[in-house]
Length: 339
Image (cartoon, one colour):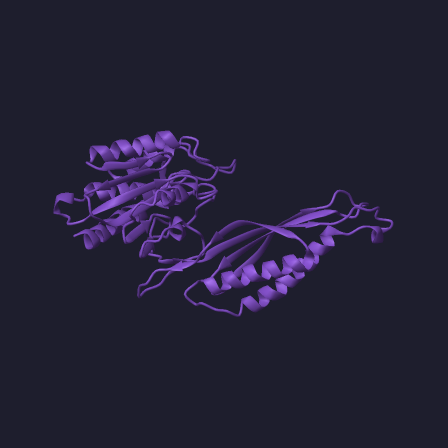
C-alpha cells in the first residue's frame, strides 16, 4: 500500500472536532496490526510500537479544521489534479500520517536494532487534548520524535511558545448623561491595553534571529463589553495572544500582566501557556505555529511534513512529489536512528 492510497482512505473520514475519530483510529490500527505492530494504548488516541527498545517516535494528529463553502473540491474525497492532491487534511496533517505509515511499512524491522513508537492523537486543532492525554500516561518517550506537521519537506527543530490571556474588567453602570456616577470598564480596559503596548514595544527589543519573526509578538485578538451607547459600561473583556521566543520573555509577560492586574483591579484567565523550545542541534530552523512538539520532553524534536504549507485554507492540497519525498525522508531517518 502506497502513501497516496492510504491518504485517500484517511481523507474519507470526517474528523472535524473528531467526529469520526473511532473510524479513523480503527483503520490505522488495522493496518498496523497487519504489519506486526503492537497496540500499546487505545482511547481516542492510539499508541503502537514495534520492537521493545525504541529510539524513534512519530506523532500525527488525526483531526482537521472545518471546511467552508468556498471549497471547489469535495473536502472528504481525495482529488488528483496537475500533480496536486486536494482534500481536507491533506496538508494538515493526514498527508504526514500517510507518509509515516508507508515509511514504517517499507522498513524491514528484522534488520533494525531499535524499534519505533507511533502516537496518533486527537483534538490538536482546538485544545491539544490528545497529546495532553499521552503526557498523562507518563509513557517512556523515545529520545527522537518526528512530528509530521506540514513543513514543505524542511526539517524544523524549534517553535515559539504561546501565551493567551482573557482579561476581564468590572465597572459601575450609570446613565451616559452623567458618566461621573459610574465607572467605565471599557476605559479601564483601554488604559490597560495602552500600558501593555508600551511594555510590548520594549519587549520587542529582545531578538533571536533563529526565528523568522525574531522577537516575541503580541496581538489584541478580541475586545468586547458594554450594553448600550447610553449606558456607562460595567464590564469589558480583552483577549491577548503572545508568541514567545524564550522563557525569559514568558516570565516578563506574566509579571507585567500581574502588575497591570493589581493596578487596574481586573482579573485574568490563562487560556494557554505553552513554552518555546529549540532542539540542541547545529542547523536550527523554526516554526511560527504551535505543534504537539511543544508538549513533549524528548531530547530531539523534529517537525517534518508535506508541502506546500497551505493548512486551514480552502481547497487544501499537497503535491505528489512532496508526499513521495517525505516517505523517503522518513525512511532515511528511521534507518539512521534505528540501525
